[in-house]
Length: 595
Image 1 (cartoon, rainbow, N blue to C red):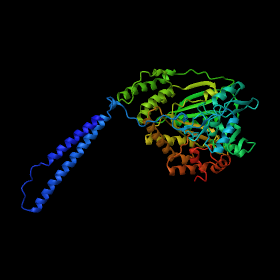
Image 2 (image 1 turned 90 degrees about the vertical axis):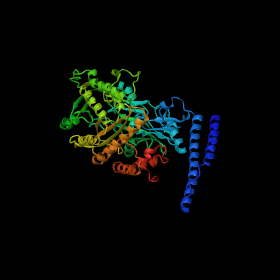
Image 3 (image 1 turned 180 degrees about the vertical axis):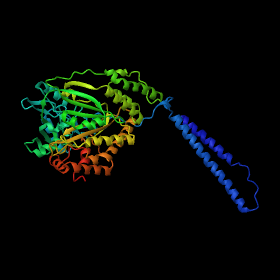
Image 4 (image 1 turned 45 degrees about the vertical axis):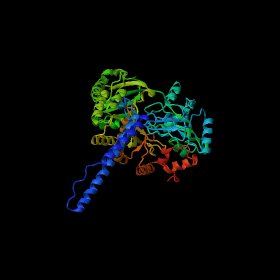
């Protein structure tokens, strides 16, 4: 600071000198004939002196401030080479836990994250939270893309309540604690020759969570997973622990099966299982003409079927799964291409893209990066998209390479159902999945294929950088009134269509840009398709609008499709203090005293 004070004194001395010199200006020019003009000239001279002193003062002050800042707070030599950071967060307190969903798209900080070890501890926890009116939102494995289980006020997780309580081999039923994960359950009951009727894409969900959000697998003859539940034990804030089944209060049982965690904490579940069996998975590549021609046959003849559409191509990947024939056994098939040959075009595109984008300094080489041949297809796709995720032309190239990968991956695979029915969804992502009626099994409406055709045309018209796949699956109806596939007609079938954008980078700016583009993509599909096809989003993938008018429109849509009044009535009865609710539930289903 000594240097800055010295500098200030030198500026003041220099300023006085300048002002002193200005008092000894050359005399004004001789007066002219008219005194008014002379008076004006004199005033102008005086004004010029004043202006000069003013601007000299400003200049001196500016120079002083700049020099003082430089000498008092000098930048390091390498400052110009450092990138600016958007935010710098202070360290979190030790008792504050950050809980996020798997994709990292939603997170909360909370001081209250409870994990009871048994039902007695859970009951005590719910009772105390209700008395204190403290939040206690049930949260499972955190796999929901929309973070439906997150609550800043407090959460309860049943990961430590993960036991198989009872197995009835004769009736093919199992009773489990709700915190058990799907894969763990399947592993523990396989020795009894049992397994679950159907599976979602992944196996890490807790049973309580997968039940409450109405998750599903695929197969037009198979219902969503909540239909596999025949009884359940619910720990409620106001009524304590209650047991529900279709024999005991069927109306409440069906409502609570897909209850979104708002009526009570699911503690135990009894599931109707099936015999464990081997399946043959058959992967083929078709086009839309073939899909239309054989669609009805594929739905009715295959136990499990799904279509994977690749935007900006006519490629449709068809995956069917059926029990291995007891008479013929698994099919004998020799793949036409090796795995390396199937991956060839994707690898070549990655090498080519690296050269292109490194030349533009969009990315830099990493000497620690594994060999390209070690990456799986989905890992390599993520790396490709990370180079330029919102460039439509680049995404199109990636999609074409994916189409070629699937063309060279046609063939058969045999394994147990829990091994075969899974699907590698790729890395972190934004997803929107809608469910809508598709006629009956005997008479499909073909609306499911019309939906896809309109969606693909929309993508091309709007030049959306949409990666693959657009995934389409089917289920039978559910009797749970809050299920997106609920119906009173037993033979109704429903189609589920998911659109996606990957988050293949941890760069905050890039993730923000991808997020904005995804919501633009989602908004376009909503505006053009949802009302036309009576499509409603999966509960684990629905997003709450920030705009008030959009939120009111969403609330109106939900009231038109689901028994919102009955659901809210049950919420008031079993959770009057709303300790189980979070912001999402309150926004989607506002209670009358909230409105």
